[in-house]
Length: 373
Image (cartoon, rainbow, N blue to C red; front, side, top):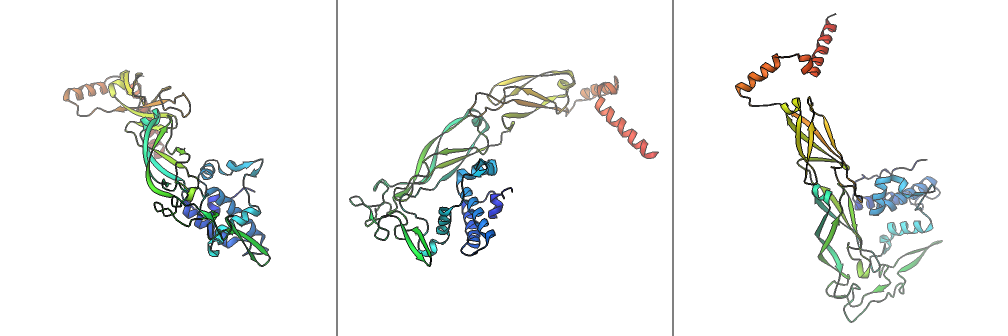
């Protein structure tokens, strides 16, 4: 049986924020938890399914892979890379009910900092050539005063007296023994008796960082660049999160991009279209290319310029450029020009000089004659 879409399973839109996904998961998990539905196999299976969906969608990297490849991104020999075992149920139970019991997932030391997102707009030329740039990112960085441990210099964290440094405590409820995050130290195993004055015991402070970013040639709109360890610092010595830079391409006045190819509309004068000639067209690399226009060229005809398109990411290859001709009808004619056009229209055979229009009106004539019969 095909798996249900993870977004539909949780009842959220594909563009939903992480907080909205978490709220939807908590609501469904509370409804379907086995303890609330004893003996209900369907509820138990649904609980497993929503846990699996949330495990993917709460993680930026897993979610990006799922958005691109669907369930196939996590399948191996017909089985997923993740599942819900005994440990999975314990984690879910703790995440849902921990706060009601005075616990919840630890927010103390050892917890990784949050990932950050930065939106960067670039031009089509920058996407073609690549770019070295610097960005200014507001973040939470490791406190220099306490070096991230949250304790005032000269002191240090001590073992939590509640969990004796383990970070977790056990409680007995009937026949069940449950282990959850220590409510006193929030899983850190340590408590701070003298908090650092600079960071109030958090081990991190808010600041702006200047970061160098390399944008490779060939990136597309929506490309994501990951800077490992450049996200927020974790609480009291926890590892840093990552920074994800999402690229957006500005609209270009001349070119429209289609993958590795580029399209350009090129207006040409009517005499050039009729008699033939050459025109110069701009290319994305800043040079010019000559296009030979054969006599009788019509509007909409495309000329392909091989190797004049966009750079291909992680390759030396380039796409193609397509110059689409648009024949321009002359305006603001002088009397002499009007006379010459009338002479042209009256001279020669219209069937030969304008075969497409003559053929069209011939079909129109036949159409109306058929209606009269």
